[in-house]
Length: 203
Image (cartoon, rainbow, N blue to C red; front, side):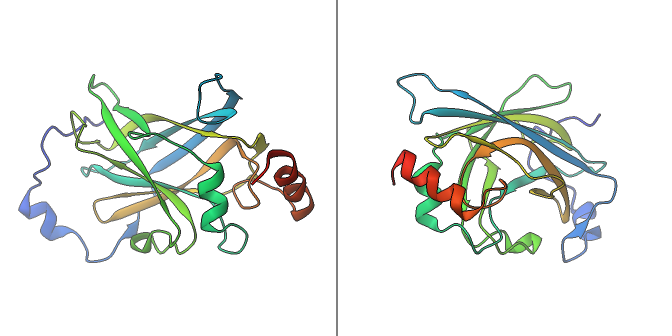
């Protein structure tokens, strides 16, 4: 397994070899699972969601960021998502395989998607912040937490809800488990059940 990077500087020679546009990495692995449990009384939401994401990239380049896609662009608006998804800063922490150092991530709601990966629908972008002790290497695992007043709902499978970028390469992966019962992907909720959820939990 590759190690994390303690310095952000990369070889100029390697940088010159990169193509100008992002390309898919066929041998990269990206996958995740979300679990839910009733939150403590003092938590910012009724339900605590824990997302675990693993990346394994056969590449010398550090992970730039990864995304969790939320919608196909037609079901959720900004108000829906911000009303029901809550996270702290940092939103989670990751470690590279074989390296005992923390990488802290911030989460940002991007309603316009991630143009660098050709995604133009709402997503949550997770990116390392300045608190991090090291740079994320090509292989690692992270745990990220968020809260919601909405109960968990099974995530539709198969899917390609996860995406990542490292250098000028990218890959996509599946998310398993559950997600708050929003009216949009990654959960399989129809409009009638979404109406029941809104009525039961308020807006």
